[in-house]
Amino acid sequence: MKIVQLYDSYFIKGGVERVLALLLNSWAADGHDVSLLVREGQVTDVYPLHADIKRSSLMHAPQPGRGRRLLNYVQDIFAIRRQPDVRGADILIANGPWCALLSILALKFPLRLRGAPALIVCDHNNPAAFGSLTRFTCRLLYRHADCVLSLTQPQAKLYQEFVHRITVISNPVNLPTPEQPIDAVPDNQVLAVGRLAYQKGFDYLLQAWALVTEQRPDAHLTIIGEGPEQSALHTQAEQLGISAQLTWLPFTNQIFQYYQRATLLAVSSRYEGQGLVLLEAQACGLPIVSFDCDFGPREIIADGQDGLLCDPANPAALAKGILQLLNEPELCTDMRNNARVAAAKYMLPQVLQQWDALFEKLVASQKTTTP
Image (cartoon, rainbow, N blue to C red; front, side):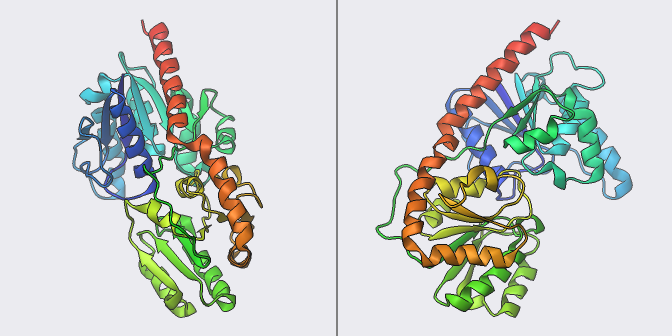
């Protein structure tokens, strides 16, 4: 089967890029003809890709300025239509709202392009956080896709108002093999992972951490991530006087080593699409203390069993949850065991089976509807 993943870019280390690499590599290893197509720049090895994966770009020079944005989109539409990998594919997966909308306009609307692949559109973030124009355009055009893929059931409910062909498939997790558990888990190491951007709410986490260290000065927070708010967050940490109890690290391909050596994961996001780090941490048996934001934490964490859910945008509540787990090691141990069990449904083989079933369904439907 010929499968194409379309995304804005592939040069930033983030959760979406990690998911794309995992799925693409798995499909290539299974013998599928797989391509990664990006709108901007070239495909780099930000996360390693299977040698058989084709890599290409829409390859036109973006025009600067607001007035030129429409021209850029028109160029993208025609580039998608002309792309050989797309025209010969069975499946095109358009990731993110603008890749999705441009693919619909290129292949499905107002007239279906003859020989066009089955089109799956997938939003990796909370659609409620999109701008008003993006939300309006999604409501208008998503119905023309062959499938709208949601990461969670609550996200799917948002689409049900204007889309009928919806499938829910979680992000996958693939643990390193063999696992290398450490002999003893420390009781004072808190981990946070994510892009240093407004969405992830690290400003809230730093406020919470200042409260935690008042009661547990021995505790240490490690934040792994990069992003546009990095400088402001470093300044905030200095102003709060918590720099000595805090380590900043860049994104790493060895993230699972940090999950395995932490006491708990702290998640302070304002909103999520699902939250890949929650799935990865849970698969490693790491208890999670998270804001109860839309979407992801509520669907992944069983409050009080494998983690704790806190009032959104409330640093004091987050600090209280972190302190509870730091001060109750037996509860932490129980949550570790429960987390590994809960994560089984997110493991890569189970998720790949759902993708395979979706592909077969869409390709069969294409054959019956193509003249």
